[in-house]
Image (cartoon, rainbow over all chains, first blue to last red; front, side, top):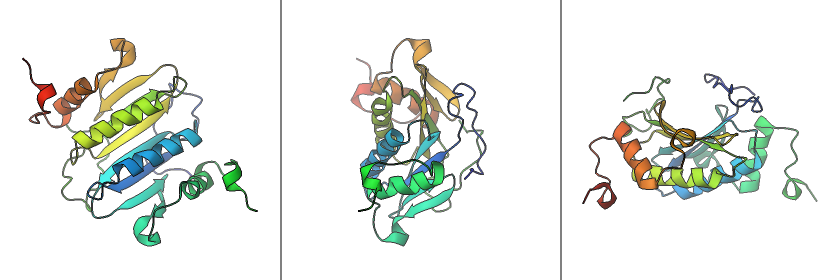
Length: 109
Length: 109
């Protein structure tokens, strides 16, 4: 799925032929910055070469939302909870690298 | 200094009346992700309410650059080293909150 945001140039990094934008929007009042940056590290590690930019966006009012290419894949207010990290990776994977195998935690039974 | 990027809506967060974009562009081959995310955490903590979005941008080829509102404030290739964290905060401060006092490490003598 392509973003409707302006395309960032990857001219210096031709191996990054994708343009996948991930955003984590978190509440600073709730002190969720460390949680957000931990998830950022997990996603950047797992999707090495598949994420163009991961944006951390401080907010307020209990927000915790994750977007991939402007698609909201998680809202704490809607779901009533934070995502498990394996669950979050599956949701990101479905948007940016649907063929990717996430390993043992990704398989059933 | 204002960004020339499209303005993100802060309608949900009227207290964020600024639009300050910070980008850390780092080399994954050099394994600088943890360094980049540590600096991100430091900046988001110090500039609470003053940074709209902090973007982590994976790259290659030894890149380590920091931009504030599209102004490059650090390039490892140009400087020959990484910034000290206090130095980095001063450079960010000069762009987005020039009146801000960064505390004891910001004073001379």
